[in-house]
Length: 150
Image 1 (tube, one colour):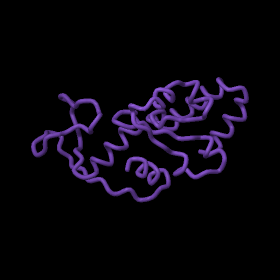
Image 2: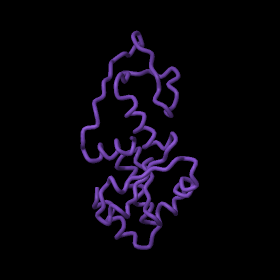
Image 3: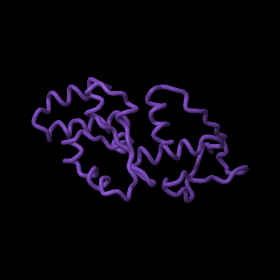
Image 4: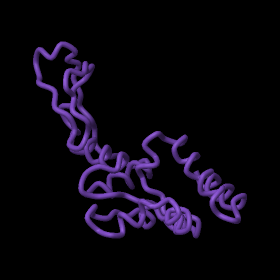
């Protein structure tokens, strides 16, 4: 489900609505953190999510690399003209391949981008691309190709 949600959002397809309520004093609802997110403790909140928490939890887990799955983007498939939907994949955290993809050299050599690198937006992607570009021999071509696709 998370993979399909990411594809929908990346494709600008409707992904459902979010319903939130302003409850700054906590008078009406008790706040609850998203699964895998840091605990709220005594943090102040402005809004509470009434509908859409499962989707937001899924996105949080995909882009922060927490939960039972890790999500990746195979940039070779995109550079070859493939669809985003075919280039995104996930693995269960207990698989050896997850540890393999945690290694930056592996990511650079295979052009596998962990979605968690995107948690800070385009800046995170640009930083990762520059780092890959410095690592690989044909860095100018690679960086041009990757930034051109955005």
